[in-house]
Image 1 (cartoon, rainbow over the protein chains, first blue to last red):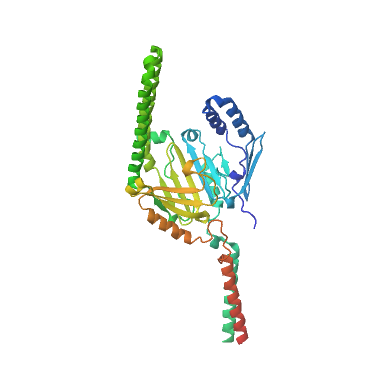
Image 2 (image 1 turned 135 degrees about the horizontal axis):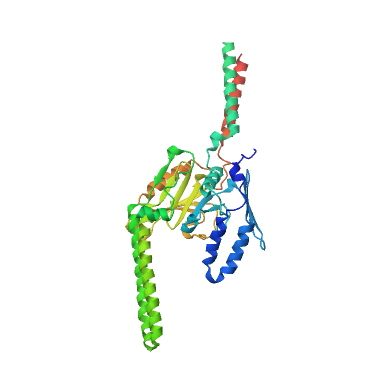
Length: 163
Length: 230
């Protein structure tokens, strides 16, 4: 089955918003003495962060020294967390954490600095397992039901002709 | 006043139920006693903090008697600041208990659930019944006294509690319910309709296409029988 096309607004997402760097600056400030180091790390994280949303899943990559790349399928999503605190809300940010069944203690993927976090969450929800009634939307079931109806019509026609 | 502060903090309004199945939405709230429970915890925490302050104050007294006078002044300043911070923090956290109780939603639809909570830092969790592995009801001695219980819904995947304490990871918590059993029964009923939930594959169960194909087979047999009769 070919994957469903995804909304163009979501397919176009590649980079986090600039506000994310402002948030990272605040985050680095909170580390006081370690501020320069933290800021540098977060700066590189922000500038190397790339997203790609396609029909089947999410690709995310970041890092220079240590390169990270995470790929996951929409259908493997277990639960979606939407987090934000006062400062982030002032910057119009929220963090989406995606959990799969993998056993890591943290979330498997953290999406930060997206344009419309709630819209993204709704999109991810619509693609996760169990969000739709499978039986009614399954195309094969639909076709088979139609075949059965046709066959029943043929049988009635045959029986009528015999009578 | 309350609205103004919440607006300033940009606390999002009531959460929307997950898309689809609008007629099956049920919204649960924390029980009235949950507020009392939170207040009690708040009171105990603050009493402990105040006791800590008092102990520190009397413990350093002896040293201060032999210290130069400037050190005494610096120490007094530090103590005053600490007390001021404590009082302001206590006031804010007191207000927070009330709002934390009020701004808390547990939304359950026929195939998914959404849990929203928090003021300063808000979290909203969404998951589907197809991903749920187990349901737990727990209640501590203090909660039992107040007739409260927590319902925990676990999804697959282990790990420790995660960076967000008990709220993180693979657990959805319905906190401070006074009708925990009702909600548990409702969740179990909903889960029954997803017998393939969690990671268990549904290979024993007949899925939609198989059932439809059997109907087709039955029709074909009847058609052959009808033709053979003639």
